[in-house]
Length: 505
Image (cartoon, rainbow, N blue to C red; front, side, top):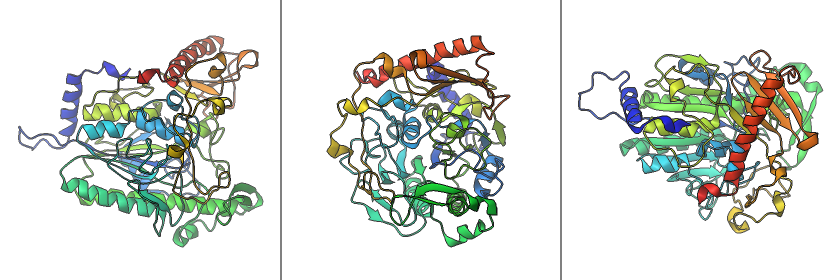
């Protein structure tokens, strides 16, 4: 799809972009390569920002980014949960292609990551925070280091106050303080070293906030001490910080802590932006913020959309998306063109003049959108929650010793205070593999399919008219349903071929 752009066209485009705002440079000066920072909140839903109209949250930094850059009002996570979406960021591919079906499913070592591509092009690459695509230990073939990051301070999953991280795969180390502040401080140290080496930098900064269980600094908790009293009447389920096991608490208390985490994350983004500005790096750094999936059930009280984390309705996959890049986006804009996390790799490849991996991609380069050339997306977006009920009987993709985590966290799973990962070989495709909830989203309509055969259920929503997905128009639009079903089936066939490992041969 994105391969239609010639290398000569890419080179010319990059040359032009690099000189925006810099026409006084000598004629023979080499254009500086754009720095890149990708930031992601954990379980941060679409409406949980001030700029999207949240009635309680204070997010002045994200609001400023949205006001100064490109606001992606219809930005989607590739999956309604974390590990799969994070894989889509690194690969530009839907996670079912490489068996990252759900949280705690690893990526496959043969995947080609954007960090590997940028590293080969001369970028210095660092990862900070949540990884969740396999263990972060040195021996892991799916660690940040194995996926192209020369430096990493990372966690197998999520974390709270006083987190524990592994530095470059070493034994876990505890850090005292607020986790977002710690990660940005470590990121800045990395940036200082990168800029002194006169190399462009690529940073992936994946926060642990606002994933439950929640905790916050007193100053941030106090900001939300006056939430409406009626929230206290509802009990919600989440993890206990004391036991690591499920508990129930009043929604009002839970929201106070959740919002405190988002505020701390927002403030830390401000610290990062300030460093970039004070060190002459802001104009030529592309700073991209997004969420990894929709808001979970313990926090989704103000969303205008149907569904939540774990569903393929808008509330599960529509997330905040902002790109701030003064050289490339000199005037603030907002767009309602559909975009998705799988678009990140092809966009950065085009920006850096790097050839795309020679394998099927699901994302598109957003360079035409950055240039103001797109009014609609030229191809639809596919979403899929693969039916993994039979996956546990397949041959493991990696030995268990290479899939065992090391970094502790509060929330227990099977009694363990860490996370172990899995992935499976899938050499043959059967009819049942086309099951699971799946979606095809074009510029107007969203087809949602559940079940197989006689049990297939189809829903169709006109999102431009009905963004809350209240009215199923499948019966009234049979031609649209047929067209989208055919396209969805073709896309699934391509994804399943990748799942067999065909792309690696």
